Image 1: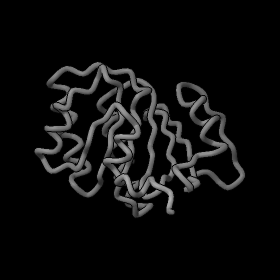
Image 2 (image 1 turned 180 degrees about the vertical axis):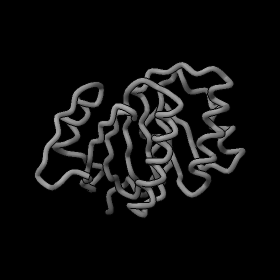
Image 3 (image 1 turned 30 degrees about the vertical axis):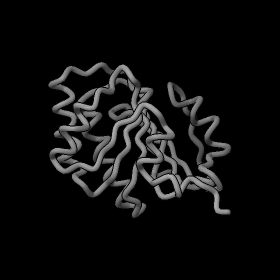
Length: 166
């Protein structure tokens, strides 16, 4: 955690996201708090609160060690904030996974998160085929994989959460 008032310069794939979302992160009428974490051993990570969920945006080169640390961070952020729903935006992670890699990823997700955290993974259409999701779900994980952000949020929190009250 950063001391209050200390600032951080963000560069790389998340710089544009941080610059635009830093000023006004909104989900309906909900205004979100945010934080950015940069560690060379981890994905560049942007964390923000949404209405009933945590949004974690990651960027940078993929590795198994980075994935493991990311899954541990998701579990920790969920426990710390007492919020069991996470929108994980990995569209800025350039990766093409083999079938065995998707299997291994599904197993890792299930081992690290189990069913305690509901995760909507937002990925690029090139990477998403549902196999890793099936592997994770078959092992008890509560995960959904999407290429459309609105669909991911609807699945994660339900459409009524995103509707403004009448």
